[in-house]
Image 1 (cartoon, rainbow, N blue to C red):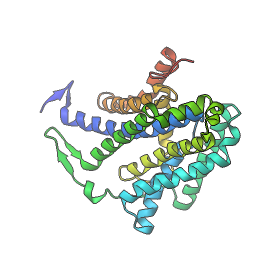
Image 2 (cartoon, rainbow, N blue to C red; image 1 turned 120 degrees about the vertical axis):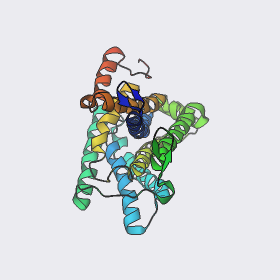
Image 3 (cartoon, rainbow, N blue to C red; image 1 turned 45 degrees about the vertical axis):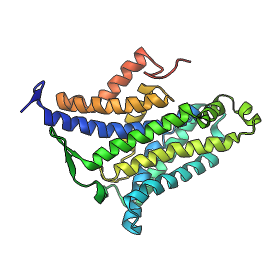
Length: 295
């Protein structure tokens, strides 16, 4: 059997696949965070709870209403996005003139409330969510078997991330969003409804979290703490990529997933902390992050 630095290639590629799956979730979640922070200057600590809410809505839809995975992939992000827009209109907009810390504390409190409600109604044990029939089984790549569902997660995550980057960085709508952040009064003078633009942007950012939650439901068990377990790593990804950098969050999310996978093979004891070690080094060497801009 072929080995690379003493590790069988099948085991190495298996761990790299796991890393790429985790990296896909990191990329979609950190992309939502980067949009919300980069365009709205909100540190959204409720992002993990909204990711969990997306997974739970998919599970509730399937268990109680027979809503299949494909419909859940559309309906759950839509529902969470509307919920997020209500939060932005009713609560967050009152804090825009204050320091970022107030927004962080508010969203932290919201995360605890949302998680507590789901814990109260559904307990802490994980709920299973079956892989859709069309994505069952695996492909034989010759050197390893690739489960179809995991291949789908990687592919659709890349499509969503790159499409979002293109819209924000290369279209007129993205230009409006950036202009609305930098000079809202000037943009409003041209007839653009800036408050609505901000609300829709926040809604899209949290909808991305819910989208990642639906993707994660068949991979991990659906439980109330699935978001809080992940959100700290995702924040580290955003810091390493550069706070508010759309491209940075995508590249860093995928890259750190792979780094975790390789570390799990060669030095498993460090796999849980390797992301934070890299974050400390990046903050010391380049505080704005790998793709961020110095202000």
